Length: 169
Ligand code: QAP
Ligand code: CO
Image (tube, rainbow, N blue to C red; front, side, top):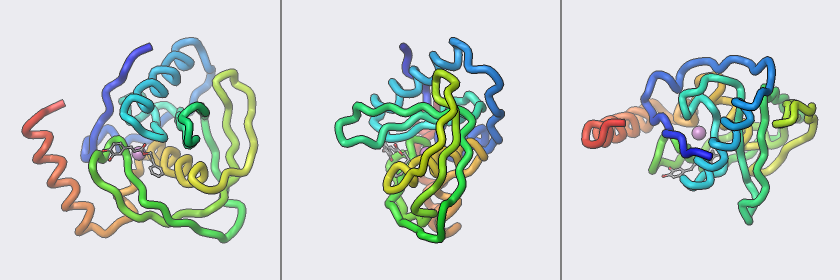
C-alpha cells in the first residue's frame, strides 16, 4: 500500500481526458487500493485516478457512514434515469478548503467494471449519485468549480495559487 500525492487546482494535468482501461491487471488493482488508502487518509469520500496524475478511467469512493464500503469503478458510464435533480454542497480533494452548492441529476444508471473486471449495472441515488458524477467529471477534465460563477472560481484559483507559492508540490 502507498499514499499518493494529489494534484491541486489549477494544475493543468487535472484538465486531461483520462483513457479507458483495456485490461485490469495487477498494477491497476494496486493503483485502486493505493487510491482508496489515499482517499481514506485525506479523509475524502471519492477520488479519481487523474487526481493522482494517472490519466486512466478509474474512480474509487466510499459514501458509507462507517467508511467500510469501498467501491472501485473502471470505465464508468453514467446515464441520468429521469428529470429529477439534487443539490449538494460539494468539495474536492483537489480543491482543498472550498465547498460550493452544485446541482446534478438525482438518479443515474451506473455501468462499469469492478476490480475483478465484473460488469456492474445499477441505479445510484443520494450521495452516491452525486459523488460518482463528480468523480466521472474528473475523468473528463471537469471540476466542480466549473459549475459555479467565474467570480467565485477565480477567487478560489487565486487563493490556492497563493498557497502553492508558499508550499510548492
Ligand atoms: C467529491 O470529495 C464529493 O476541501 C469527493 O479540505 C464531495 O472527498 C462528492 C475534502 C462532496 C459529493 C459531495 C475536501 C477533504 C474531501 C476538502 C471529497 C478538504 C479535505 C473531498
Ligand atoms: Co474531486
